[in-house]
Length: 193
Length: 221
Image (cartoon, each protein chain N blue to C red):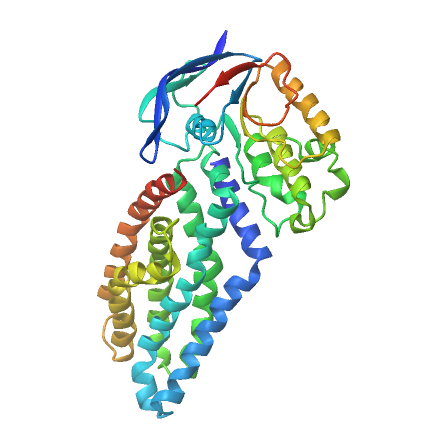
């Protein structure tokens, strides 16, 4: 069963047509890796699926519906972490929306001991892991990841691999743009640019 | 509703953690108000005559201070994306921001207006009119400010543009708010002025979040 369908998607970034009548499908439990040089439109595509970027043509369908607001989790270049809040408090908003368990998410990325620490004390890699933990907390079936493991150590990348596997095993869909090896066995590839 | 409450709770928690921002606005309000007696002389009749206007202008300017960080910080660190992906319409995200701005900046200003008005020798009879006007006026300012902050988001020198955009829109608030307090101190009815203020608030309440929501959508593109 196809969960995510791109139907003739086109989008401009500035004056440049970066996505030209793109079509792809991802099945439940499937993953799609976006590949291509810088500026090929990988981030644009992810933001378009998330609904943050308006399309200039075509449409995305998730479970057959065009409106899937609140069902997609997006991790962009920026972590979206508030330095003044503790690690736990940073995940509170996502947890309120989904009812997900914060402590479990922190443990799954070895952030348990840092739970009560203000995020400004965390290193860049730890902040990235906290942003990954927000994905775990969100119950969103569709994950849109833009360079998710940038600055993350190998042990945590392996832990994130288990998280991705669990997400896909439960029927979730992963769309990821990356230049680094990502633990997504059996992922389809889409070349842009 | 859960999502809206989550946005509000998040905003209030952040404001609590960065308490300096709203406290700074409060201090500005006091200091600016205290400059007037020094500049125009301590004569009680003059001060009493000018008091409503002074309190109103200082309150408007003080409420402007936290506005450029209202969306700016979230925009820069990527949190705005997360807010817009919560499944809540962008206009309701903006409404949540406006309500939190009012609770964190408007309400403290309302409370601080009492000692400032007394210091400026505002007649006791005019105090209820001043506060009733300020309660609505600060709410209007939070709504207008949220809309304008969303509109200048991502613009270079947005901080300079913001007051230029907001202040002209607040002139009706200033006119009717100060007139209500003036009328009360002259023994005239304050009701018509407050009703006009209420009408302005009633217009801003649905319009400003919609405008802010559209501007936020445009800013993240």
